[in-house]
Image 1: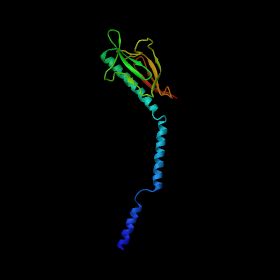
Image 2 (image 1 turned 180 degrees about the horizontal axis):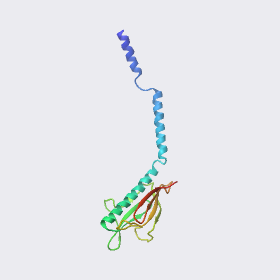
Image 3 (image 1 turned 120 degrees about the horizontal axis):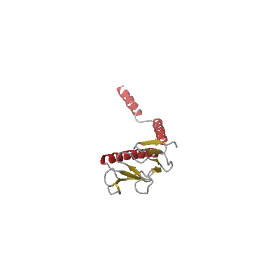
Image 4 (image 1 turned 60 degrees about the vertical axis):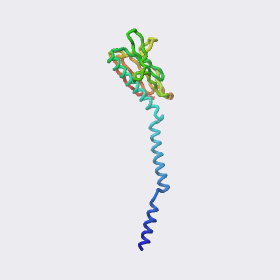
Length: 172
């Protein structure tokens, strides 16, 4: 009798090892539903998020330039292009000198699929740079948009004369 109960116990344990085909299919279906919700929530696979991060980085960069202008009591500037922006400083010989080097104050390049669009600057002169930051922290008013190839104007960045910077999400 001991042998028969031991045999039943051993065969019973063998049946409880592993998963059934139904259990595996249910788990695969749950994972598929979860992934589909994640893809739907990202929509354009993160391009909008990348544009927002680029716009926030631009604002942070401008604030750093404002602090640098105040601390060094110098006029700084920013030349803005479709895929990048370049800082300048105004020297005592009345020349704009591009800031280069291994610091944060160098040309900033956007991700390949992110663009700066519809740049409106108050500084109309043809000389570099277009956006001037004064030693007081004030700057020339401007507005510009960050977007992608498919949606040009996702986020609007606005700078006022008194140096305040704002980020707005556009309705597309």
